[in-house]
Length: 246
Image 1 (cartoon, rainbow, N blue to C red):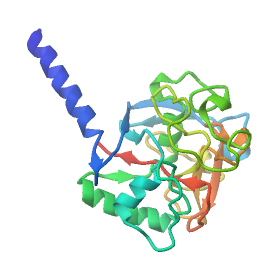
Image 2: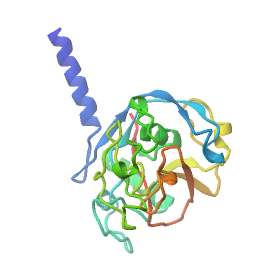
Image 3: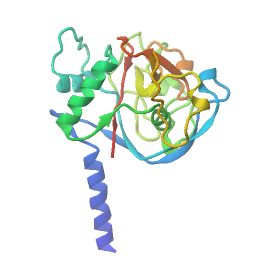
């Protein structure tokens, strides 16, 4: 009995340690999202969020916070023209091409495999995963509790983690900055989406972004609301969050 308990403690410690790597002195906090299935989309929402459909996902780790300007600088160095105005705020004004370079460098530094979340992984985690309480926003039905959005942000980004987390301990998945996903955007993808680990790899002009931002209204901040952004568009209210593969 004691032996089994010690083994369980060691396994738990290993999983926790593996999910909390340091990158050039920056402590990265990753949250374990247990495999599960859920109903994705919204039959009562906009056309691109229809139909409600079943999705099954494998285990993954997701960043507790959006990638900060501090982490970006530690991986990429000081970039000419890059505005670093709040080191604990989300990095923004980055193209998908630059994000892909960041991921390549981060993977080399860490020896792990980081990537953008798929849209399905993003929605499952934002909804609370297997611990979901079916909130409208990420962690609450009261947007003020969990998000920086047009009504309370003073029209600027804010340091990560100041608002209440969701059921899994994830912060700012509603509001602050839009979060890029790996999926290419298709208005009709949900109609043909596979059940297991969906990811739209059919190229289009846009990538999926989720969660709303500091200048978004309440509708955009809902966990089931979809949006898109041009692949190489640099904007001040769009950032990203990391998945670490097991």
